[in-house]
Amino acid sequence: MKTKGGRTPLHVAVVMRRVEVVKKLQEAKGTLDQGHPGDPSIREDFDPEVMVYVLDQMMVDAKVDVLFNTFAFDAVVEDNIVKGVAIANKSGPQIVQADVVVDATGDADIAAAAGARFVMGREVDGRAHGGALMMEVGGIDIDKLMGYLKNRPRKTDGENKKLGEEISRLCGGGGGRFDTLLSLDGKRGYFSMGGLDRSWEEVEQDRREGRFLKLPGLDDEWLQFIKEGEVPPLHGASRVIYPRAPGLNRFGLIKQGKMRYDQTNTGMHETFFDQTDEKEISEALIYMRKLDRIFIKFLNERIPGFEDAYIIRTSPMVGTRESRRIIGEYTLTAEDCANGNWFPDVIAKCGRACNVHSLTGIWGEHIWLEPKRPFDIPYRCLIPKGIDNLLVAGRSISEDYIALGAVRAQPNCMSVGEAAGTAAALSANLGVSPRELDIKILQEKLIEHGALLFLEDEEK
Ligand SMILES: Cc1cc2nc3c(=O)[nH]c(=O)nc-3n(C[C@H](O)[C@H](O)[C@H](O)COP(=O)(O)OP(=O)(O)OC[C@H]3O[C@@H](n4cnc5c(N)ncnc54)[C@H](O)[C@@H]3O)c2cc1C
Image: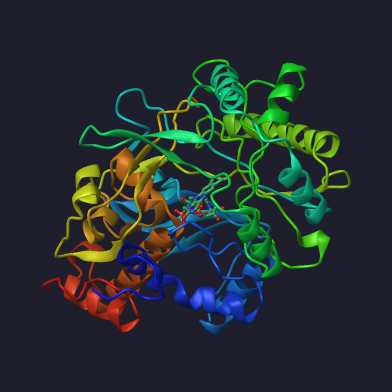
């Protein structure tokens, strides 16, 4: 298998499918596409306004009828065959009839309404990934911030140890910059979720070249803030602990030189609630917005360079990592991912590790399972058992909770979404149900569109 541009083979496998969107984002100057220093995965932080424009234009070019501000709240089902969906928007409630329905709600809302069976959370206690609210912060004096971080007195090993212990006590264990890696074969180890992996010379060069900055953390200052009683306990954690410090390790500079565009994605306030229950979602949103105000107060008051910083916006909806997972014709397992299993009905090739965050808020419960080689997502995972004319795309396909840690990654969701849409169109055109669709026809069409389904050393 060939690699491209120095990337590892695993990540070449996942990048192929989103080339079109990335290219359009680059053309519209909505991303730097330079990745994160020291991070082997390929990610593009992007300007969300440019992304919205790019996607609008792609819809127009594809002659898609778009209905914004529309909520699908029910499925029209006859004899276990989905015939359409019930939607509501400014024009009132409506029924949309369809030959094939694709549920891309991320929560399997339509599948659940149609009576498809599903599971939520890990098997042992039903706990699932937390939800999170991203925020963008502007008005940061980056040079002043970097000067502050560079010139902070260096801690002795003893002081660092003490800091780690205090973080453990107040923020849920773990300590320092490390989280626990649990592998399925029983190995335990530690890996860094961020922090300063680069020398200051490299960071300064990144700054000059407009790359994403990885800056050291603010644990010391944040612990002081917690001790002074400024921070509320973490919502939904399995015991009383406090949120971690806002992070600077992925400091996306979307537009150089314009402070308004300088932003930090904290993503720190992963909180725990049922992400299919609107009352719980709303309570969590109120908590997360309050926490954002506490973050910005902390940054304004305690961190040089942030004196005039302000929240540009918080995301308009809560970010969900996990909710319903359907029971499909095949359930992708952790072993499938770890072993890099290949399936005759592959519709997406994935290289990402199963990244299962702590489901309790307690550090050290993070699972990171690296696949031996890229693994396949079979078409059967998109087909709910016992229901016809319905395909499920995105993070809620049929998988166990560890496999979800890999499938939920955006490139994989995009690949699965494209496969679901293509399968729906082919099924409708050929007059067959998605369950009966000839997998070879689907695979040929996906490959024609640029999908990477088979590696060079793989027999079809
Ligand atoms: C804070 C956070 C950080 C993350 N970081 C990363 C990362 O670094 N890299 C990575 O690859 N992944 C990351 N993820 C995971 C990734 O973003 C998600 O798993 C992925 O977006 C899921 O894609 P999806 O298409 O299944 O669902 P979504 O992206 O959630 O899309 C579902 C869409 O359907 C709409 N919808 C939902 N219900 C209905 C309904 N009933 N009617 C009409 N519309 C509806 C929603 O509004 C939404 O637009 C992160 C997630 C979060 C929350």
